Length: 363
Image (cartoon, rainbow, N blue to C red; front, top):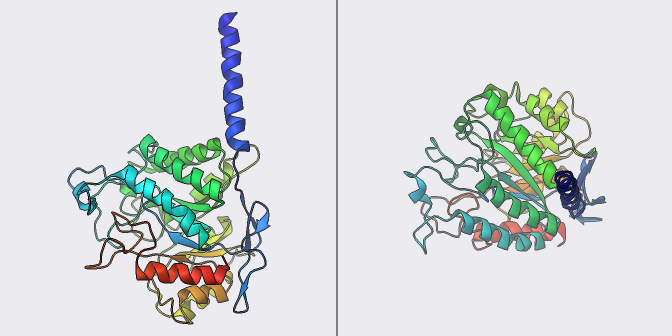
């Protein structure tokens, strides 16, 4: 009898905890045709800038290293902080979280973070470091997900919408086979849904057409993983999902048909008029229907100029996101992808982006 009572008490507690975690969430993201809504209201409500409609867009920045770590003892020394001369994954996440309210105060509603990070040098030919939130079999590494939970909780509190990438080329090879990839997607989505998050957008992989080892992460088959994410539900809710391609590339029909929104990259696109053209070409892909288009990676700046990639995207009613990294001989304050990261707004490029962002969004 006592065992039965204990069992029922434990079951009730678990049900309460699950319900509590789901009902206590503050932020929900949804889509109506080309527009994003947070908690049922259009983003940047009523906002126009230079005659361009801003409401319904989702301005963002590439902040993929928020849970970065390096499990390779031979390369971890590359990421030492200049003040302490050592790498500290928890410090990295702490400082990320400390700056989130500052980003939000300038109108940043979203950021891309990735479970396998991105190149900590900006661009890389090889990636000997080991930065993956998954084991070789595709199981979750708890320390990574504990750091992720802290970021997602803060985003939920602030009314922000993380774009969570699952895989990054050069690190996907850390998973043994296709079964491990599928397991990683399944466990990640289950974890998000079980935590009750309703403010997350999923990016299957960063630039699916760039050097992935596993076929299911390549352009011809990546829609299978999009459909897998869409198939998983809790209490009738599912996650919104897409994937991205390399700079200047237009998505293929299979991805456009499967996705809830479209991700474009502006890397290598030096002419703002090409940004406008990319948006139009995307709308002409077979399978496109009214849906949001987001640039969530673009390493072009010129924010002081009236015409740049950011303003070009806005003129086409597409959301835009900064990609900034520490270039040769630059100081610690530069870039949001180079590790160790200064997550503050302390460089001229960062200041230029956030100044224009604040102006455009009216924050």
